[in-house]
Structures are given as structure tokens and as C-alpha cells.
Image 1 (cartoon, one colour):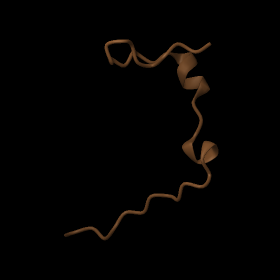
Image 2 (cartoon, rainbow, N blue to C red):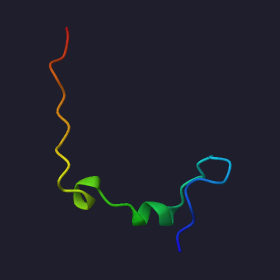
Image 3 (spheres, rainbow, N blue to C red):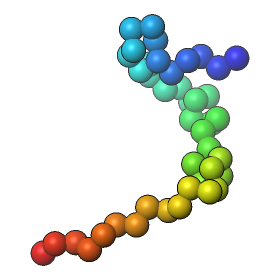
Image 4 (cartoon, one colour):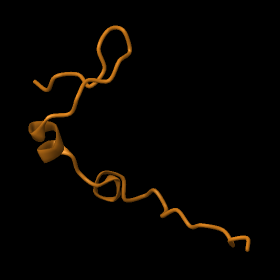
Length: 43
């Protein structure tokens, strides 16, 4: 079982190499979410 990322006090623990190895792109997990598009930029 994976160790929770947040402790009982609500603090996020330091991520380990194993945590990073298990991460996947959001696009792969939720392909139905549309990509974010930036609006026009001001000068």
C-alpha cells in the first residue's frame, strides 16, 4: 500500500523517488478533460 501524501495534521510529506515513479500524466488517467487554453495576452 502507498504511504499517504498528507499526514493527519494536513501537512504534505516529502515525495520520494518511488512516488515519482508511480505518477502518471493526467491526460492518461482522465482523457475526457479538455486541454487548458490560455486566453489572449496583454501587452
